[in-house]
Image (cartoon, rainbow, N blue to C red; front, side, top):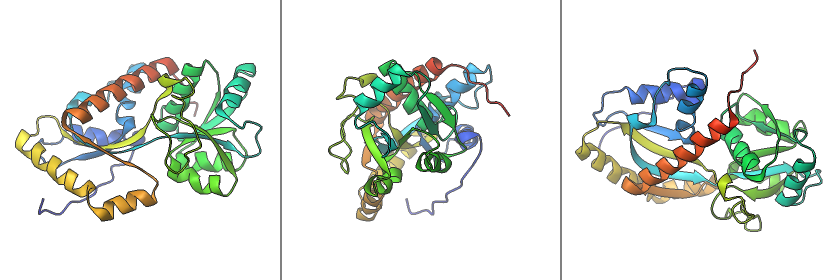
Length: 270
């Protein structure tokens, strides 16, 4: 692009502050959004509570999908479940007694578990925390029974023998865990879920600018240094752009919107 790129972290409201900022920015190609799959969750959660959504997904022009983490289900190694089948069968026998931690209500880790719960017909007890770090600490400390997580975060604990992987939410097995099946393989295709990262521009950005940005993004993800960094994170590059990314985004938004509606309104006690 021959221009410096500044990264501005607009924190707050689970990412909604930054998303709203870009949604209402001048569509000139100089303000972009790097968003996670929560971009599809937040507006639906707002609707549940009768709030005016901070933004809507149609306020963005999708540029490119960068990565799609095939989330995996892990449990403490000292728990009796050796397989996802064991876990689900036990959950059916003891509704509401098996607990899982998450990064927060309606967060990506929460939604992955809810999609599984509805696909498998089980009821789990949700224990939300203020972020993914505390959610991981909770399972490592034996305070909860399960966690949905991106592979990079839990792989060291799987290798050390503290956590046991049971299954993945992606459409293919995690490369670092080839022996771990997907929920799709086990008959729960409706549970498919990814913690993905994509780049967006404000809707109305000129097509010429979008084309230039897409070209630059393709060059960036093909850079060996970038690929090496992603490999270290155990996060597969899943580059899609144009209509291909739009189809992926639309399908994921529908799936997550339905998931939020199934979860329903959850009041957070203060």
